[in-house]
Length: 379
Image (cartoon, rainbow, N blue to C red; front, top):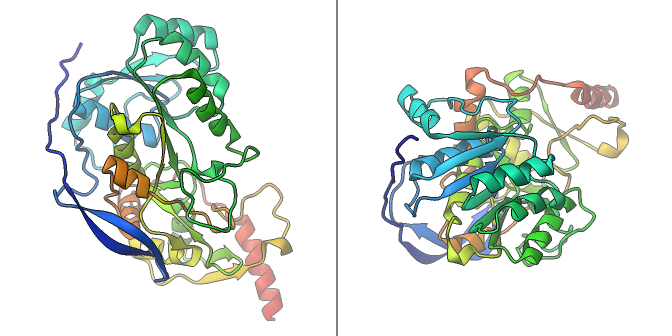
């Protein structure tokens, strides 16, 4: 087995100060406190504080969040195994990653091939291996978690990737971890998983991201805007465009996942994780243009009720105000996102789309429906 290296780094100190948050258009949303980091760290660099070496299993790990999380954990000196179906390469070189860093990571990452829905295999294989910690990145239903818990009676911590989508729609925002949840949401399986973990009495931590963006994103979040900007097309935005939303960079999310590892303050706790600032839909279009070096975008507003898009999704965000407070994570964990929105979008564009790497082909079908109706109304 390859020798594991421990990366040690002094803990950052924090000072308290009052502040206010603003969206990209300048509308201020006041919060009581934020924490200012006094120790400098390179933007988005994969450095984390050291802890005792753990034998860690990541359920998933070959896409997006797992790619960045696994690198952080390996760099910290943990033995990391990815549980996947083996349909994707276990190790993939990141944009901008040196050959040496990639070779070092590839030599240390381990793989357990299987289907997590094959519960008998999950129980037998995990029992044979034994793991200290499980990161569940791709779990959607509580029944998928039960065989993992049964197989690992000495498990020290179960860290779960949930979603801020579990919150009940509300007129009072931002969403906080104590807010009411929606048992009928499309993320109800994640909500049920949190309840299941609590009922089993295990040491668990749940992370609830809002919208995640960054390099290698397979969901059409920032990519949706970059496609249209690169094609020189107008950007269709539903209704007024002042709906407020929130994004969080994948590297900041990965750092949060590592921060809760072995952290007593994270035991049986839920944390919202996203960027500190909120942004309007129109503001996001302008932020993407700025990040990619494009001219001021032409934004076209439309009423979704006037169109029948069928099963096609005309816009990548839910058409409502949707954002969450990250004050608990900042205060309890000492976590703080490194990326502001434009910096994060620039990182995503330069390392991904700027190289001509789009995850999905552009589909402007719904755009053309909207624009053609606008032209008819104007004629």
